[in-house]
Image 1 (spheres, rainbow, N blue to C red):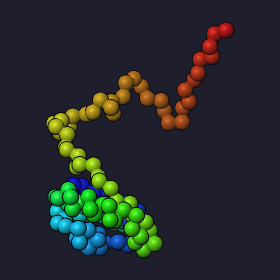
Image 2 (image 1 turned 30 degrees about the horizontal axis):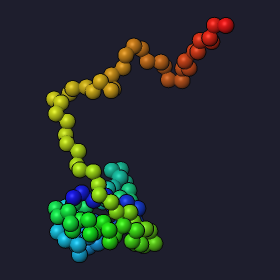
Image 3 (image 1 turned 90 degrees about the vertical axis):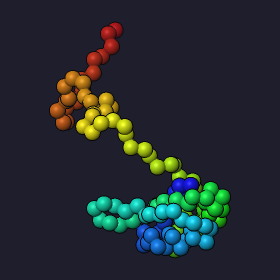
Image 4 (image 1 turned 90 degrees about the horizontal axis):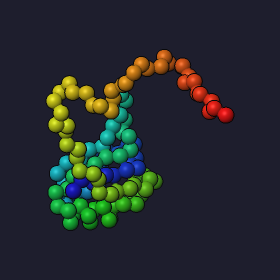
Length: 115
């Protein structure tokens, strides 16, 4: 089960996260999400535990636990996203533009309703 851990202290390391969950069972993987530019923690991470019973016990025991005066929030996370099956270089329709774009700063003119 993928577990989301939020409101982590910024100084918490991956090893600290591992030690927090190890008493509950086997840890398949774990990570703390960091900012690409600075490398600093974003205050949340993920733990993957293969046994759902152990994972549920960890969630129940650790949700709301105080760590460095912060109450962490622990809940079942979403399953990892699957990669797109579209061939490389294929554009998504969501990002296609139709017609001309307005220049930056230009305002759209409104038509007043006929009276």
